[in-house]
Length: 90
Image (cartoon, rainbow, N blue to C red; front, top):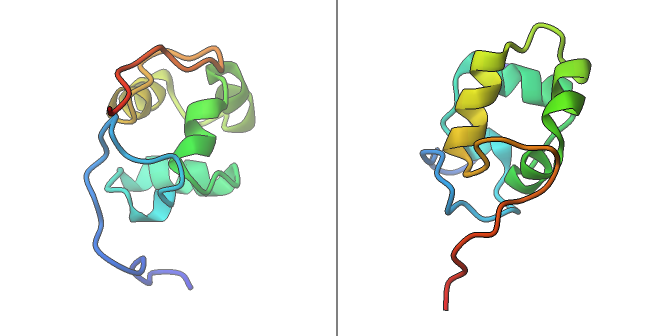
């Protein structure tokens, strides 16, 4: 499995990505991808739901810069494990 591309095209991370989108299909840095894989986070929704503190404890070499970058790209700039109120599609 190592080194193989994810099935299907890779997509740019945006706040509009659906929660069930596999993290492997999102264009994130290798450092972030590896950290999320190590934490066994598989979908965008799982990443959005986990608190910053839990990520930092689970991934001691995952810096605040990477965390901030990840949160911004997935539409959750700062997290205590609570989603912001956002525009819902009508």
